[in-house]
Image 1 (cartoon, rainbow, N blue to C red):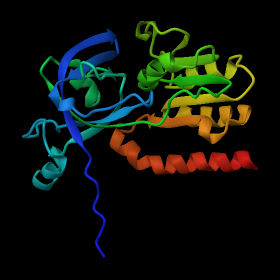
Image 2 (image 1 turned 60 degrees about the vertical axis):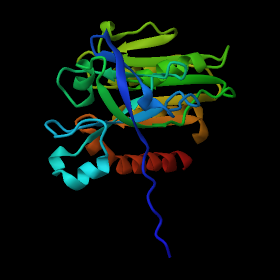
Image 3 (image 1 turned 45 degrees about the vertical axis):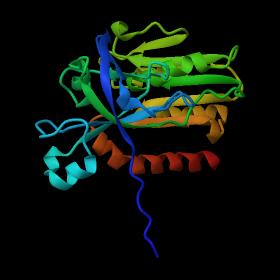
Length: 275
């Protein structure tokens, strides 16, 4: 019997075309170049890519083969992967736009984006994705923190014409708002991520009928809102796009390890609703 081989993920290398700071905590980077040949996005509005960064001080740069690096380099030099939403893909000029939340020197991807200059290279794999606004829903509910803002912004022009939509986005303060029609901006201030957002959604006057629901962001508030909305509107699972993008106090690697337990907790919520 021949053992099945794991399909190797296709990676591409984009070249920074331009970068700009949209708000105090958001940097937009546009990638282009021949390295993006074959990239395709557009079916979904929550397309995402896996960005691959060399570890700080590593003796290699993009392009690189992650498997070769892991075989030849010590663990502290292995590349770091971070997941980011595709804000836009323009197949004509072949330009990929990614928005990065930046909080000073915190993290890996944010500092890279803050210092990105034309000509810099960024390695990535993807895109994946699963959500686009359904034309058959009675109305639409989109909720997220800063990390979900790119996906929500990408979804807005794809909402069915005339369909009611209620959109809530939490950011740190007024300076982080963008010019997006119909968005209710919630200011976090010094409160925990998602607490003000959850309160705003649960206190809002929302329509009757069954919505298509998109709730993404910090895992704690996402689970809480999922339970509340699912119970209140009896939303079928096929009309729920709910995901914990990240978790307070955890790196992406840590959250990746935690996520199976989080998924199990969500399934426990489902079982409780069915009782």
